[in-house]
Amino acid sequence: MADSHKKVEELTYKEASTELELIIRNLESGDMELEDSLASYTRGVELLRSLRARLADAEQKVSVLLADVDGTDTLVPAEAADTSDTLSF
Amino acid sequence: MPGWNLTGTASSGHTDGDALSVSQAVEMAAGALDALPQLTVLGEVTGFRGPNARSGHCYFQIKDDSCAVDCIIWRGSYAKRTFDLRDGMQVNLTGNFNLYKATGRMSFVARSFSLAGEGLLRQQVAALAEKLRREGLMDDARKRRIPVFCTRVAVVTSLSGAVIDDVKRTLRRRNPLVELICVGSKVQGEGAPAELIEGLARAAAIEPAPDCILLVRGGGSFEDLMTFNDEGLARAVAACPVPVVTGIGHEPDTSICDMVSDRRCSTPTAAAESVAPAMSDLIDVLDARERRLGVSMSALVRGVAGDVDGQRSRLERAMAARLERLVLALDAAARRPCLASPTGMLERREADLMQTADRLASAITRSQERFAVGLAGAAPRLVATTSELTAHRHALDLAASRLAHEGRAVTAARAADLAAAAASLDALSPLKVLARGYSITYGPAGVVTHAGDVAPGDEVRIGLVDGDVFAQVGSVERHVGADAPTR
Image 1 (cartoon, helix red, strand yellow):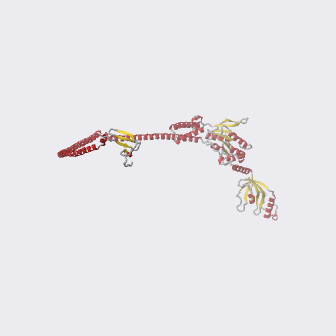
Image 2: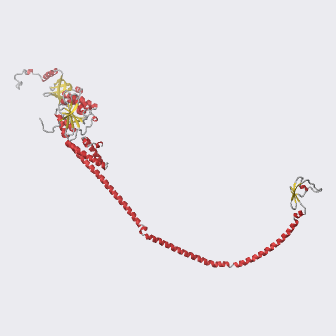
Image 3: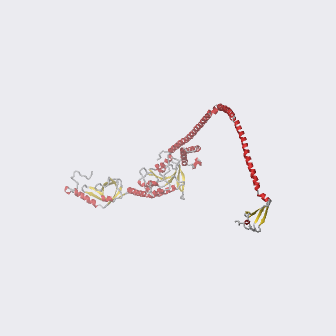
């Protein structure tokens, strides 16, 4: 677990998710020392909590790739999708 | 209906006498048709059932919105075709009209035909698809895996249409964790393929690179969607360094871009949905993981607890067994006679000793008795042996006196003999002769008794009664008459 030293908040969702799965598999394999497994479990709970929070607080991020006058591309933040399902004519 | 006279009485320019036979009429019509030059007719194929099983000729119809006409392609002409005819095809047919006089049916006999309009486009598209397929651009092995959960997704499409909003809305509802980057481009018309190619390149160049690129467009006519059958664009999709997901048009539409992309979805919405799992799925996954985490941890703890229990019971069993062994050993020790009855041993030894003492005592007594009996027997025997000694002493005394007597007798006789012998010997002794002045001469060969025994010069000793004289012979004179003794 190379990422185990990284703080949970610094991990991306995918990294955190991957690490959590790894921890669970290690625990499920059952050949860990009790101390290690307790440490892993603590880390796993932490990751799980963080992942849940991220799902709950997720906000769509949208940007548009715009070409400047000199031809270089820049990312410009854009509005997220409109979630109102009313039809506009 | 004007122009018709059902009574046949008036206005007709022909009388019965002017009437043509059917053959004549048909012949006229046929001539008129033959006079037409070779024509190329554009029409839609209908009622096509393939070449006739027996003759190999094709009989069908071509039509447009308002008219239809029978059409024939002879076997020889159909054999030269570049594609099979199908109902619905727009086809350019080149040939002439012909009237089959036996039935009066007019047909267009086509000598050659080619696809027209959309049909032509479709054929070209199919040819391009085949070409790219042969190049291997559509091989499944080429297709890259799209991550199950793309967190960064570029969308290349028109920014003005409804499609981009559909994609945004779909992903916002499905999974707002997906970051969207919109790259605008024309999606139809002149220059659209070039813009899309550039859009793909720009999207792939974004730092950090997106997990995949959505190349999407809403539904449209076949011509509208032709942009996505562009060879250059198809090659750009295949060569794009980032995996490409296509969602072009509606369900039945398939473009060449769809065929060469890494994943083909039927619509833009489907494409957007395919790049990330739904939030509810993510929550389910997390729920499942939470359960697995709990289950595995408690299993681990149970396992460890079980191990501890097991070890404790093993310890207890081992301890109990050890104690039991010690108890048995102690019991065994306690049962041994030295501990069970310490006095018993002493008593046994005492008994042994007493027995030995008894044996000793009785043995001594018996021994004394035996000696006493022997002594008692020996005393009279000793006395008996001394009783014969007196007789022997007498005999000895007698023998001693006889020995002394006999001894004296023997020595007396011998003493007398000896004295006589000594007297004789004394009388005969040469010493007495010498005393009277005689001498004895000894020469080299002993006593000199004859003159010849010596020679002049010989050393001689002359024994006298009281000593010896040593002399040298001066000369020898023999008495006359004396025999010469041999020397």
